[in-house]
Amino acid sequence: MKKSTILTLLVIALVLSLFLTPLGYHGKVWLNRLFSFTPNIEASEDQKTLASYDWTLKDPNWNFFNFEKSKGNVIFINFWASWRLPCAAELQDIQALYDDYGEQIDFYIITNEERPPVEAFMAEKKFTFPVTYLIIGEPAPVMTEPVPSSYIIDKQGTIIVRADDIADWDNSKIRKLLDTLIAE
Image (cartoon, rainbow, N blue to C red; front, side):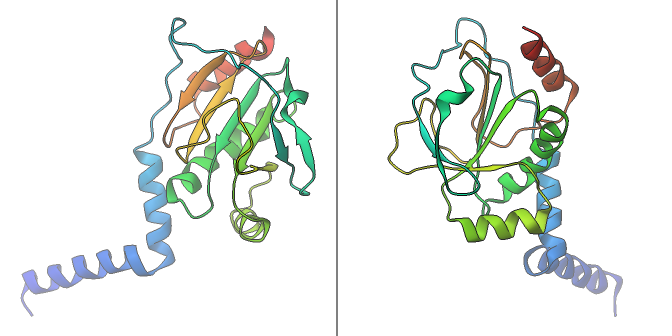
């Protein structure tokens, strides 16, 4: 065979592996992480304050609770879906933040999916952060779309960071911001 034929077959095999094998899944997650950027801190004139903390959600055990319990705390909210590849890429960074800040920040990693696929996804990926379940139709203090989207909210209820797409959360800029918000 000619070199060009061999090269063409190798490229076809690589492309097929991206679509038909677990290697492709991990490669796509890696590419999503590679092209994610640190979210911007909202300019002070653009920052909005939560109008209300009255928001009913479900905890990992499927029990109802009110978001009001987080009033006065630093809050990290992420809306995700197990079937969305950008979410899987982003959740790795969120797990790292949860590991380091889980006792100091209220984490709401929120999905509108049913429990079985979420629990399977969490076990497969070895994520340990608590999952919060969105109640469809329940009024929320923040936008619940698009997925993924995330917020960092300070102790006064001001939205400091809003990211409407995949973001790089595990970096020095975000960690410095969280340390500052916790210390306030």
